[in-house]
Image (cartoon, rainbow, N blue to C red; front, side):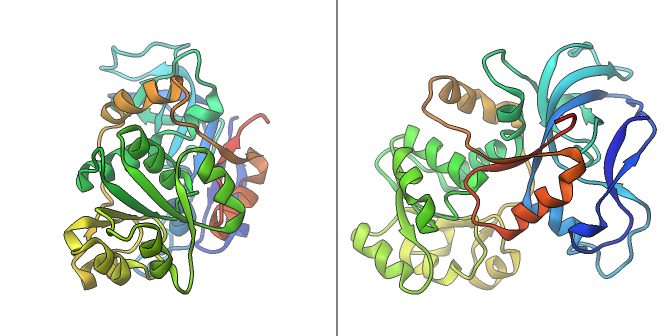
Length: 307
């Protein structure tokens, strides 16, 4: 029987277990994927900790992992655009990508080009769609200045590089150890913490045109003041702060296919890089989520079945 990471109760990473599970059968409009790599996102460990449970216990054992890459293993009724053996990447249908096999909606997959590795492909879906969606909400264009909080994380890195490719100036908050790397990709780094907004004003005395918050560590009031209004700020991680300060919160995913239309050519041309922070075997999924939960990443954390 294939193996998958599951948890039966909310809690820290120790609740994750490697279990044998039945081979999932694709339903109508679904594809079964033999997973080559799965991405780890903050949403994974927040679900595992029960942040969205409303205080109710977990009703049944569940998997973890929102995004994957791999090879089509079987297709369900009504699926005509995919066939077994095709290399794909995209979103998990059941948030169970940390597994040897998982299901995905056919519409949520994109063909993996030969030049793109499976690990890099697994790092793309959530960060690419999210970065593309939020830059569209902020209408970031050539000649503008964008501030990104947590610029060295998965979404921050993609958003910064896409914005740079569009001709924008990008300032990104990050730990000192990530400053050199941010400079390599054209992002001007700034240390977060006390005095952050004074440091940003010194770098951009004319102010900034837009702010993308991937951090959620209380930066929204200063961001609104810096950008000249709440309509120029989007947060991905602080819905309560967004409501308090009139900022837009963006949490509903859009089309991956639309996003990769712009992003994949930039990746192929070397204008967008996909740094991998760490890769863990399936049996060490708990360590992978701990690394994500501890923060201060440079790029994506991945889980690789069979590693």
